[in-house]
Length: 121
Image (cartoon, rainbow, N blue to C red; front, side):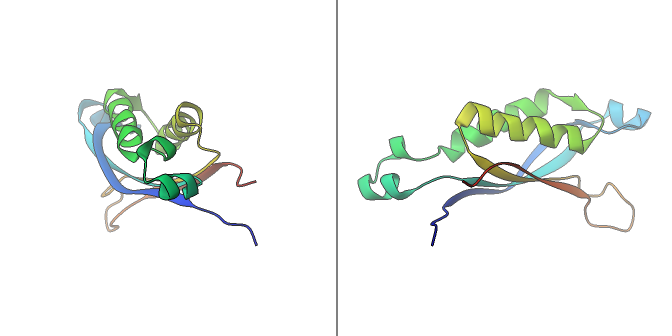
């Protein structure tokens, strides 16, 4: 049986310019990220040392800065860029990322895309 460990960031909210309509290009809207990252936590647990773990604060900060400065039309594009940052900059082998745009569709609580990138092996 294979062990799988994950580091989660849930409900990271950032305001950004996102959308395809003219009115959306003039305002900042809220997007929410839920992130599940594969990360072997055994060494961190054994040594009780942050040097061996995935720094979720650093991941959150870098994503928030990127998103705040971005201006995409689609949440799909935003999701791809965020997944690349997580995998490339933090050496995460696999990520599941949900990018939500609450209130984007009248009558619904939320719309979102959910992507997985990388490999668990």
